[in-house]
Length: 113
Length: 113
Image (cartoon, rainbow over all chains, first blue to last red; front, side, top):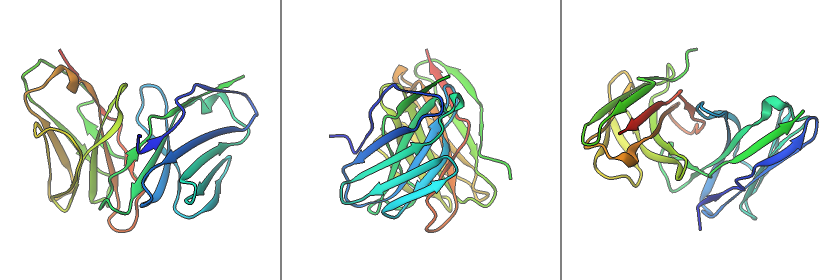
């Protein structure tokens, strides 16, 4: 079992719809959770982070964390074609000092005009 | 504020050679982590440096090494290159302390022939 799992996709949504990206993790010591967006040929760009159970909203993005279910998700409202990218879920464990992040394989999102 | 910079951006090497990649973190960031990204394995943690000391290490062979200088700039070195070392090498920096958000540089694309 991989430490951080994501559906590889592609996830296809029409423009203006809500895109829902999911991530599960196996380490119960995981304490911090990050969503990165990576356009083809580019490096990952941090778009959201969440440390506490519940929802965290930033513009069109909402991160949701449920530590009991070991589940974190990213919702993108009013999806735009420019949101088409691979979304990477990353997790930091309390057992890892410093900045070591464990990444999922990423979910490819395609927003159709 | 300038972002993370990495040099060179592209590199072509031959099997058996060695290579050194460089990373300059965001001003004020003292932690630098290195990751390898390949289509098959995704983003994998190599190591992290803070205050010129390696604080964390991933599951990579000893051919992969790194160091950090007093100005927080970091280098990673790969000796005796193998075809499988072809990848995007990403550097990420973060602030010191209980701040876990990491910001990636543009990466160095290494091709081993």
